[in-house]
Amino acid sequence: MTDVLLPGDTAPADADASPSIATATQATPYLDFDVPHAVATYRRLSAALPETALHYAVKANPEPRLLEALARAGCRFDVASPAEITAALLAGAAPGDLVYSNPVKRRDDVRFAARLGVDLFAVDSPAEVAKVAEAAPGSRVLARLVTSGDGSDWPLSRKFGCSTGEVVDLLRQAAARGLHADGVSFHVGSQQRDPESWRAPIEAAASIFKTLRADGLDPWLLDLGGGFPARLDEGCPAPEAYGAAIERHLSAAFGDQRPTTIAEPGRGIAADAGVLVATVVGVVHRAGIRWVFLDAGVFTGLVETLDEAIRYPLGTDRTGPTGPCVLAGPTCDSTDVLYEDVPVELPLALIEGDRVRFHGAGAYTATYSTIGFNGFAPLATVVR
Ligand SMILES: Cc1ncc(COP(=O)(O)O)c(C=O)c1O
Figure 1 (cartoon, rainbow, N blue to C red):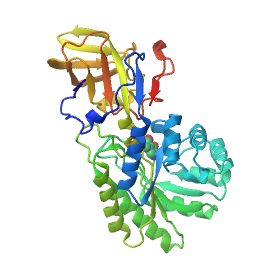
Figure 2 (cartoon, rainbow, N blue to C red; figure 1 turned 45 degrees about the horizontal axis):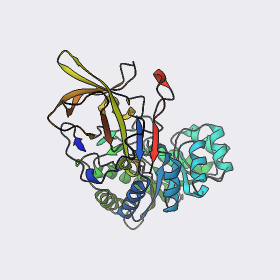
Figure 3 (tube, rainbow, N blue to C red; figure 1 turned 180 degrees about the horizontal axis):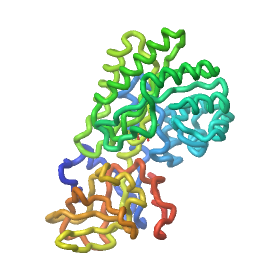
Figure 4 (cartoon, helix red, strand yellow; figure 1 turned 60 degrees about the vertical axis):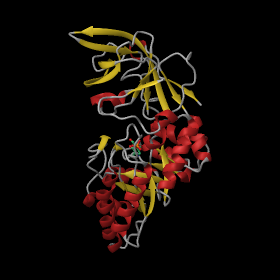
């Protein structure tokens, strides 16, 4: 197998340990997903953050066998909808192991969660505080702090989160409405390459806790969010570097009043366990540029190539000299182009029928996929 890397990328340290491909006869495109690999990654991240309970973000990959294996390993879950709550409970989690982290929820969904015993909800607006107080009375809330998202390949800024002052107000409102103002959550942006990115929100959380304690409230829980990266290339530090940086910033900001911490990793657990396998459907030369069309694209699991944000290391079985090409998906939609601004290097001998592998694709692919656009089926998953 030849791993052909994107310009500027270097081989992932564990490229040779990447999951092998289940079968050469499986129709493409499909995601080859290695559950034990994901569980081993969970254990490593857990060891890197020994004081922090991990809640796997189900949205990253809700594959039931993954959820079951993680639950057996002691992992808790971060959920964003009733379907994810159901999936986590069916996998063996207890309702108290869940954090409902979507800050803007349907009222009926909050009721559904509360009926099943889920009691921890994220909020980031007064309307949501009122909604949770009405639909899940007496439950616990985390107010979500906005972050810059700097340093991440897939920022989550703007849509969710509010300022330090607003978080203080929300937690006061929550307490006044009979909710437990447990603390603060944030997300530093997905595929976060800089462990120092946790510093500013941890410092902000410490000042929020101080203000609330002066009010007589008792915040105690800090949700460190997701953002832990797939090691798509050697540009990402190891999990241990994240754990050390976070612990250092917690200690500097909170001193001997360290809060209880949880985190919501998705990509950092699932991504490296998956390889998306596609087939070349055509090679076209246009104005001196080689275009390689695949049977997987933006609508078939590779949404995160939008704006070329997530750059997957690629592999093929072809050897020989490589050259640049534009990589495109199979639909007639002009947005279905994976990499064009920064072309990829693939073997010049690549032809129709050859397979192309996207490494580090176990997160945000399997369900981030069309249900039939242009007649193409959703991405299949082969689980090992
Ligand atoms: C609230 C929340 N928590 C956790 C995650 C998981 O993030 P990541 O996959 O970067 O670990 C996300 C991702 O969108 C999220 O929105």
